Length: 273
Image (cartoon, rainbow, N blue to C red):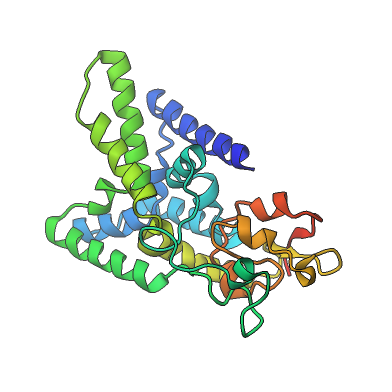
């Protein structure tokens, strides 16, 4: 699954770059960003209606499929898949762990997810509010300066300019350094800092309640949870145990499918239940 996620993310980046260099008016991933939409509206004092359909389409995909953008498209996840560091717990590392995984038994309440670190909509909402306030003051969408998606595209464009016109710039050093810092120093970037995650979190609340939306769950008939198996939670970057996951736990699922790939009895299925 790791290599498949890398391939999908690279294909998306390549498609966007090809459209850009071919002058195809397809826009970029940034044109679909709800944070950018909100910042532009605040900074300019007018609603960018042309961007609204793309933003709504992206949120609709999240509502239907969950936070798959985070695992399969976002450059942050791509960087982690390429260089490691796929454990986004805590601001700079792990601050919690699945009690059931660590001990081989459930917590006092019998829920191995009870001690896991969860995504924080409140923290992401505060970050978003600060960014909107600053954008209002400076009349510029400030998140675009350090957004992982913008940094990735900025690095690619800088590299292409170097290869085509031999015009090196400081962005070839600054942009990758900022992206790596966000990925490896702020391990909790996606779950507690990224303002885009605030919008995805709201859409994910709808996703887990849609009866037809696919979600990873363990089949009780073949799951080895009762025998002490915690493989799904061990391999999951969000410490989600498919055997006991609540709707609140599944809101954090990014659809990486590592649990499905590594389950020893193939008990993990994508189901609407």
